[in-house]
Image 1 (cartoon, rainbow, N blue to C red):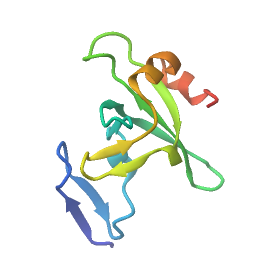
Image 2: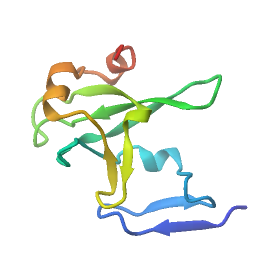
Image 3: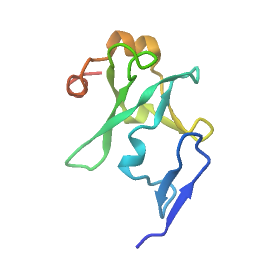
Image 4: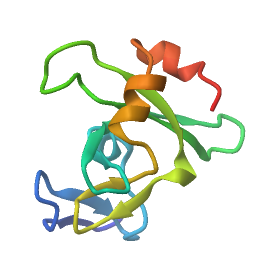
Length: 117
């Protein structure tokens, strides 16, 4: 059984890794904050889409959870390679912004899954 280790450098919650520090459990990715290039939070990882043939993550569905918890939650399909983990932020940085979430986000996660970027 691989040795478990907890990285407590993230401000919101510890990131649990198993063995290799480059691997992370899927339940630890979901809920992780997503920031724009300006380092302002635009949402969080709702879930991610895995290619069932290759096993590779293809896209992440980012949710904004509504503005200040009010209003409609928007979901946006973002290519996995567009996200870069920033340990200082404890989350992922992407090119998306609040404006992109407003303009291109979908009202349901299922609609976001069908989105073509």
